[in-house]
Image (cartoon, rainbow, N blue to C red; front, side):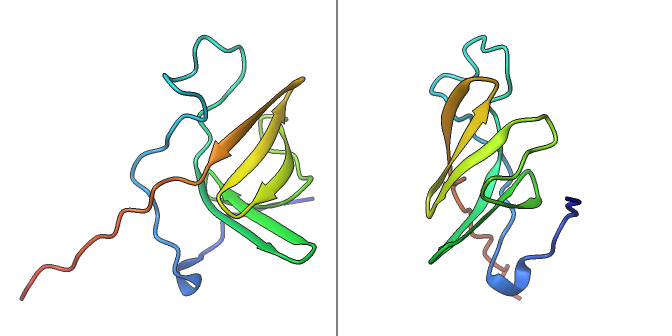
Length: 101
């Protein structure tokens, strides 16, 4: 399955400036990646999608680094990297206010 970057501005998506680690205190020396940037999670009935590192994925898909998306919930995504599972929280959305003219 091929994935490409998508433009989600029509759905109200606003990019985040900084990714947060899935683990408190950073990666903690883990031998696998934990700093995924989850910017959108969408659940509707059996349809479950997310945007991780600006790429659109469906539940069950594999990420570029080989990790697998196990479960998509409205505010977080469960990822399995090797045999370790961890939750990636939805990144905080920062609203950029327009300057007064």
